[in-house]
Image (cartoon, rainbow, N blue to C red; front, side, top):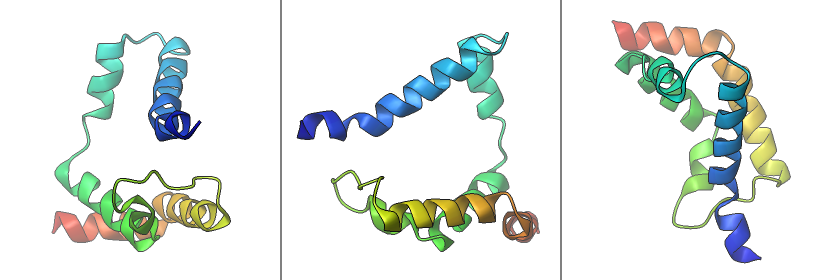
Length: 97
């Protein structure tokens, strides 16, 4: 059972990607290309927001985090809030300078 949970995040990511591809008219190559069009500043800003929300503390070491824990869900919600809010835009502008 422990092995199952080890691969759960990868499986969920694959399922999400398949769902996104199935719902669109793009091919897997096109979907990947669209994802890969982020600038260096966008990736760095996203990483900074991810760390500021505290998500990095859950991914230290070889253990997969308990993604169902209250702490993880709160940090993830904070990351999503910051990522879609002004914090990300401000960080992005700072990185572009």
